[in-house]
Amino acid sequence: MGDIPTGKASDFGRLGLVDLLVVVYCVLRVIGKTQVPCSLVLKRPASTSDLTIFYFHGGGYISSQPAHYLLFLLRLAEAILEQNVSVSIFALDYSLAPEHPFPKQLMEAAAAYNYLIYEEHISPEKIVIAGDSAGGHLALSFLVDLANKRRSSTETKGLQTPRGLVLMSPWLSLHNELPSFVMNAHKDVLSASFLRSTARHFVNDDAPMNSSYLEFLSPESEIEWSTVLPFWVWISAGADEIFIDNIKSWTKLIKSQKERVILEVGVRKVHVWQWLETVMDYDMKKKFLSRDLGDKRGFEATADVGKAIAGRVREN
Image (cartoon, rainbow, N blue to C red; front, side, top):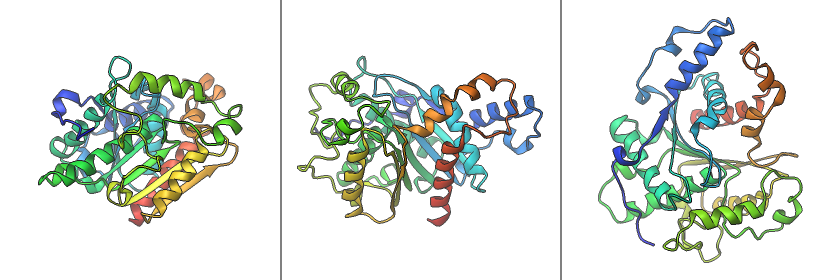
């Protein structure tokens, strides 16, 4: 499988800018009778932010969309702002399988990255790629593709590696063979059978499962992570998720090639628990329209992700 074709941003880029999310947040804060600084309501160029997060959602490549992550992204942005780091967030509304098998999603990610650089005028030095589950898989596939294109192109700006990478419970292998798939099968919200089914839907015949764009744990892999990964990498996983062994193995692998890699494991936590605790807290949902939105209960896990990102930005 050669380089992934690159399209124009206008062909593939369907992006949601966090300024829109911040405006929604401001409106909700006003409804909750909490004062909102006027600067949050004013639309500003994303290029002026200290940090731009380019987010890929999960869903096994067959479901979900950025709107399902609204509360999560709102709290993430707020937590980063609380650390005195200004932020914009773009979430890629990529095409879903089986109607659109891989590498359609990768082509869209590449085009959207070009959009951020050339149309939003954001420096790659300010961009952090982030993704959960299948979105983490897409993030790594995108970075592998970016590195491959750098080796065969005289172009520099549009192929520059972003500054950082944030992965929450990333899907790293399509083979699902390590012990935690059995040991945590009855603890996690994710199942191996679901993964096998989605893999059949999103991988077409032209992209074998051991391709370097799809398989990140294969012993035969020739991926040079030292050239693929950004300056810093932050990874989270739940101790009770089926991916935990894969994530620990991959973290050990990349630490042998790369500095500034951090893995945080949540005790008694499941797959992408930060997002789940944000969107599935029953009490939070029940009270949402009438609650005081200054109350952050139900959002602590997401806030911790924001603090970790802001911390990496300030240190590096």
